[in-house]
Amino acid sequence: MALVGPIIYFNTMKKSGEKRVYKALNHLAEANNCKIDEYDVWGTSGIAIDKSSKKVFYVKKDSKNDVVVDLTFVKLCREFETKGKSKLFTERLELIFDLTNSANGSINIEFYNGQNSNFAVSDEDKLLQKWQQIVNKTIAL
Image (cartoon, rainbow, N blue to C red; front, top):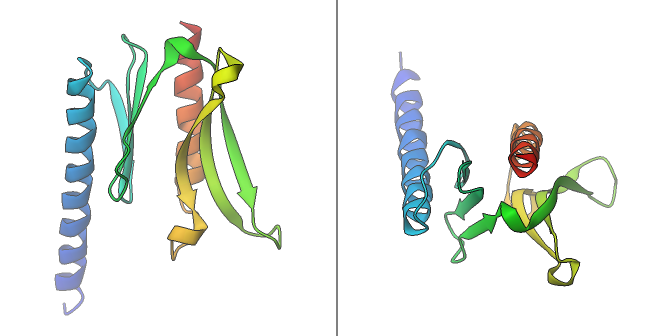
């Protein structure tokens, strides 16, 4: 019984954090005259898509730069994993949007950064794969 209190407290805090991230995503979408069709929240980050306008939105709690990606200017979306020096651990996971005009480079969205986390990769790799598929399907439409 003594464990129930802390479990409820942490679950409430997690849901409260998820709501804040969702509100930030929704605000960013509305500011771009869009609506969210699908979204995911992990930790203090979130990603969403408006499939009809072909825009992806990304927010991160401590970041001052929210990201809006217009998929009409993206030729391909891909996963990128950086391994640590030992090659045993993942250092970074990113979703990379290769732009149609290669002179403009690419846009990277961070799903995991081992330097900013005390935890190992949990579900970020699955989310990364999921969003790569969602984005590439939307680009193909």
